[in-house]
Length: 296
Image 1 (cartoon, rainbow, N blue to C red):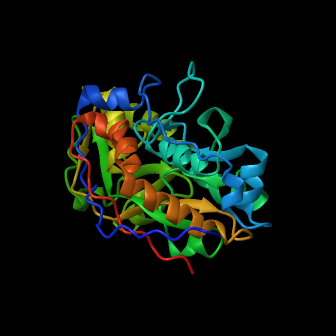
Image 2 (image 1 turned 45 degrees about the horizontal axis):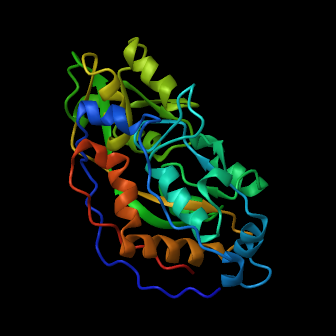
Image 3 (image 1 turned 120 degrees about the vertical axis):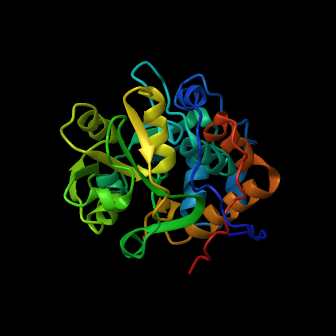
């Protein structure tokens, strides 16, 4: 393909993102307007014959898997037409580089446990769903990035005595099935409980069935914003979660296109626009974008 852009050098500082209550609610709302990204004209001409990018550009359509239950990251209310959040914004940026406007994107709800199967089966073209990059996943699917870096924390009832990682030993902690968060918390001595969606896990914490929930701090703070009198986030981030864009290993050429497009967005201000329209609604400073891994 015909892209050759300079990679961003800065490392992300998204750990410990402090979302304010009102703003976090806005970040998950359908009223949060995203960026107006330039849709490339005649985009198919920019790609070599036989590449997946050219096929998508010629078709004018793309299917992207995102979360529907993560305020600020990827959220779609029952009355909403499309999901909103930082991940869908990244999807719009990538689609625009293919000449595909946001209205022609098909958004597919993707939970943690079906991200790899969706990519392997061709159910989706890309997965942008708080998809932490790991060596194990990269052995099964492609992951380009990271486009954002955050860290794992705990969410507990407001009256909980849990305030450190030492306190989770022997407790039940939930997250979504197939997530790295469950593996990390089990290593700390907790009994992991997996659910299909984050909202199910939140409900279990609210009704007292489990002691805590764990996942990326930015996601947890979104749920606290919806239940400020009942929930709280505790402990400093105890992992580094590097969000990547998933693609099929049958289409390895997609890695460089994804990386180059995201790097260009970091350079031209579109990445900053995407952040400020979603997670940045809290009023926190926009972090420096992370350096992307090289494509093999």
